Amino acid sequence: MQRSHALRLVDQLRAASGPACTVTGDAASPSFEIPAERYRAAAWFERERPLFELPRIATVSSAIARGACLPLGTVLFVRDGDGVLRAFANSCRHRGTRLVAEPCAAKALVCPYHGWTYSLAGELMHVPHAEVFGGAEQGRNLRALPVAEHAGFVWLGGDPRPHLGELAGDLAALDAEDLVVYRASRTARRCNWKFLVEAFLDGYHLRTLHRDSIYRFFRDAASVAERVGPHIRAVTARRALDQPDPRLAATPSLFVFPATTIVEHPDFISVLTAHGRDAEHTDFEHLMLVPASRAGETEHWQKSWDLIDGAVFQAEDAWVCEEMQHGLDAGTETLLFGGLEHAVAWFHDALGSWRQSSAPMPKPQ
Ligand code: FES
Ligand SMILES: [Fe+2]
Image (cartoon, rainbow, N blue to C red; front, side, top):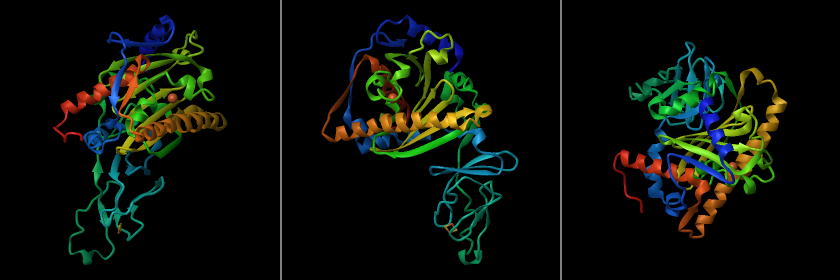
């Protein structure tokens, strides 16, 4: 987050007395309800599926060296010897086998099944016994996906700047060019993707859900947030709120619409992305980014990883999202949100605006 924004929001936090969910641009924060069907109905999810084609962070540029192949989910990232980064559907154009299963260095991409071979630019170069295809194999290059590099991040979906708008300055302020991936996790969660967004949009749950892990670092129900187009900028008060350094006084976070949350811990950064598979199944990704100059401090980072990824994000935040999905199975009709959860209303408002601006889609059942 840009320092000027962080300082301004932290000042708002300091000025607040009692529970704080100060809202810039909105008046009061009334309670509101959201129908449970938005988290359960297959038709509703189908309306939302195109959201996952918007530009989103896949990793940092430093994670893909020249000549490196990095498979992430169903996507294969490849940087050629000239430094050009490309993304492909990670699937052979013969019979669809996953082409690359593990990060590797390569001069060409060779399918493990029958040996079809592609250049790092995705062109089909060699087919064993090609004559038996009668020419049908020609032109079956890898399916290229839009990808861009911006502010030190690799963005699947293409150039993110039009989408980021004013938030671009906050992304640049993360100095991601100087960050490396310490570890990453990708877990399949049985819950709607929006739960994994909303899990990071309120400070209300810290005292209960995170009682035994990180609540000791934070104040109860004290955060301020503001909208930046469809995105959200927020800070959550730490116990050391009086510290002059805003990143010690509070934890800044950026929500990048539609499904990415960036959390600025005191000395490292988490990038959390939810990728919906269907209405009730989501891939949940966590990238832990540390300064390249301190990458060797593995004992220190491992402690942070065990706490933040293991105890907090997986065993508490993502766990409770699955518990919510189970709860909906009981026939729950609406979810109630209070003033401390106001950012969730913004998120749904942004989803509504996006639905209106996109092509007509089937009415949800
Ligand atoms: S499936 Fe890849 S070469 Fe046959
Ligand atoms: Fe949490």
